[in-house]
Length: 112
Length: 115
Image 1 (spheres, each protein chain N blue to C red):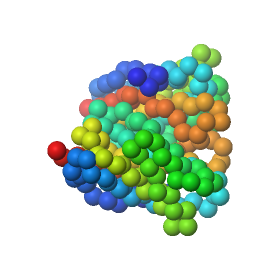
Image 2 (image 1 turned 90 degrees about the vertical axis):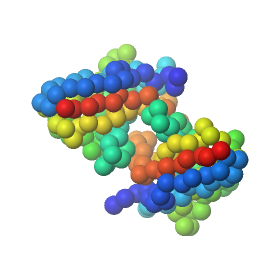
Image 3 (image 1 turned 30 degrees about the vertical axis):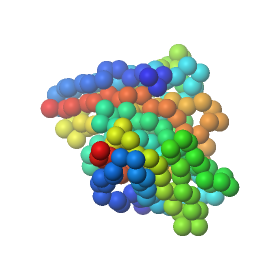
Image 4 (image 1 turned 60 degrees about the horizontal axis):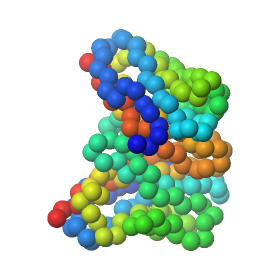
């Protein structure tokens, strides 16, 4: 157990639907990162939050949004889902000043 | 432009032998960090080793070592005494010195250890 908790582990949904992925970082970690891993794009950075504030944005679609709550857990919202959104979505967390981070076990999203 | 390049095809390695996984990177930032992660078939991403751009010595962590050649912009991972549990995808990643700690990943190397 890495200490980063992601739920659900698997999600199957239809095109056009909206889903929410949840991430609880390791105790004490203030930063949360979201990554998408797909067969064609590989691992892509989506967005980072630090202590509730958006810190950096990567290749995140406008249909996707995220937030980090006061208890530091984070949610990634994916809407108007398309077949191409099927991927493994990772959350990771880190401690300030420590390079690199710990990944959760991921949420496998399948859009049918 | 691709920042991390991993071009080796899938590799079969005999148990107990060493394997080297190639990684080249591209950055103009003098401050950066290089990482290797392991992803077994179960899907989780496991941190293996880190090398900072200013580190004078190559990083080592148990059976993992990083062959850092700064002038060549390469950061190859060496796994010594391969075990069956080393069968996995291995990803090289780079953090650039913009303070945000986000990583750019390569496409990965598939390693299969055979008994």
